[in-house]
Structure formats: structure tokens, C-alpha cells
Length: 243
Image (tube, rainbow, N blue to C red; front, side):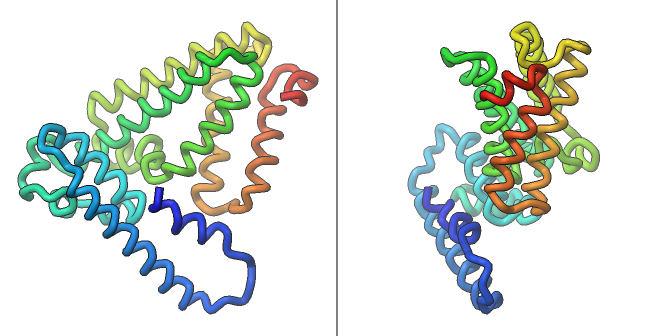
């Protein structure tokens, strides 16, 4: 968890008249040191029997720390400690690698949904927990989230068949749950599960994007906005005010 230190410190900086240049330089150094330390450890833990997993984990960390633009097949090979041709045996090119990262993200998102559905709690509480978990996942994995729902793959790139399958499967799991939530009087019944699911998801996605893009930064705002959004989305105002 050490690679989260940089983000924690940045988010916790008070609004004072600091020398921003010195601060940026300081945290850039911290970021580089954490990245290098992680990669040194990563190489020692790498096992040739599971190169695909190692490549994906390393690629995820690279884009989280340095952005998608900085990721290349050559850098990935050097980071993992394999020949520069090795990644191409698993991913045809960078587009295929990014599709695999996005695909992994969709299955993780579906896993979150399934885990919440399995809990022995009310449908209202499950929905509230999912809203919080959805936004939290988007913020903690913002680069992956951009790949899952952004133009890099869906408009500017070429989404793979397996990525399309993963996205459809995750969305279907969501729509099936929306239908259940409608039956439990948590979400409105004035339209189909598909339309209610689409517009409800649009609200979750929109809120996540506001914080990912830096339009909102205050975590207190996030908590209050989540609470209000849940009240807006739920079909019974008296019920939603209690969750």
C-alpha cells in the first residue's frame, strides 16, 4: 500500500501559501522513489509461470503512477524484467494490452456488485453501498476507469471482442439487479429496468467523472453529493432518507 502515500499527502495538503514549485518537486521525487521501490520488489516476485498476470499488474501500476501515455510495450518488458519481445506473446500490441486492463476492470466491478448482493442486508442498504463502492472504485482506479468507459478504446482505439463481452456481461448483471431493486421498491417502476438502469448508471458515472476530472476535490462534497444522489434516485423519498 505504500504507493498510496503520495496521493494521501497531496489530498491532505491545507490551503496555505506554500512554495508550490518546491512542493511539486518534493512529491515528484517521492513518487519516483515509491515507483522504483515497487518495481524493484515486483521484479523479485515475478514468476515466469504467470507472465500475463505479471504484465497486467505492472501495466496497471505504470498507468496509475505515470498515466496511459507513458505506458509502452518496451517499458513494460523492462519493468517486469523480461525480453522486449516477451509481452508480444501475450498481447499483440498496446491496444490489446489496454483492452485487457479494461476487461479486468469490468470483471472487478462485477465482482463488487456480486459481493454486495450476497450480503445479508436490505435491498436499500445494498444499493447505497453499491453507489459508494462504485464511486470509490472509479476514484481509486481512475486510469483503468478511463479505459473502461473512455474514448481511448471505444472511439479512438479498437475494443477487443473479449472486452466487449466483459462490458456487456457487467452491464447485464447491473440491469438484472436493477430489476430486483424495482421489485423491492428501491428504484422507480415507471420505466423498464433497462432505462432505469441506464439513467441510474449515468448518474453514478457523472459523479465519478466530476471528481476524476478535478471539478470537485473536497471529499466532504463527495459524501454529501452521494447521499443526495441516492435520495434522488430512490423511488420512495421516505425510504431513501433513512439509508
